[in-house]
Image 1 (cartoon, rainbow, N blue to C red):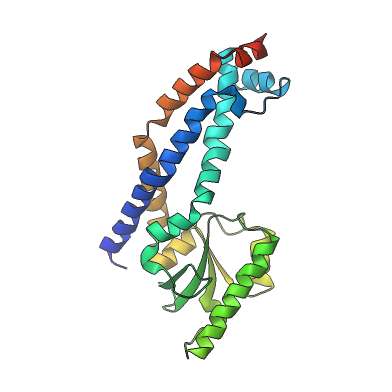
Image 2 (cartoon, helix red, strand yellow):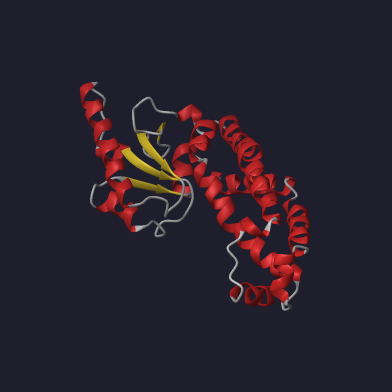
Length: 238
């Protein structure tokens, strides 16, 4: 892969975050100015607020409610739900015509063509997904035989976009240990895709650069201010 092609992927990632992830993140953050968006535990939330800031005020309570949602579950859910748009928008040049296969690429390390199921992270499949992935790979292998394509077992791989070896769940381990499919995790996946061992680090930096553009800290403070003024939050302080 040329340097120009690698830079094109980085720009696609930035564009995807600007056009898909950030707007969803902003929308989901702004709606949290309404306390009805939270399932409030009146015993635990004040404790968390005081633990977080060292004081119990409407503002500390608002932050205790907001931070886990905005910086945790909200963005994680949004990214996961838009996984297919990531594949189509960022990795579209590697798209596969084989049913059940997300992308095809020439492995930069062994030079062989890989048929890849792309997954988000090391804990993002469940037990049922194991059999589904296995069936997709089996169909791809049979199609290769039918069309005289030299598809070997280790040409069928699961590409995990982030994480480190050893973090993979038992379901991923089952694909590897029981069904003998290769797992390309995090840096290894992007290295094999691009041929650049530092690409994974560049990718993370590119995403962080886009996050700075969003000016999320200002928006978070504004939403916390609005939430802190609601009667529901004030009552938690007493």
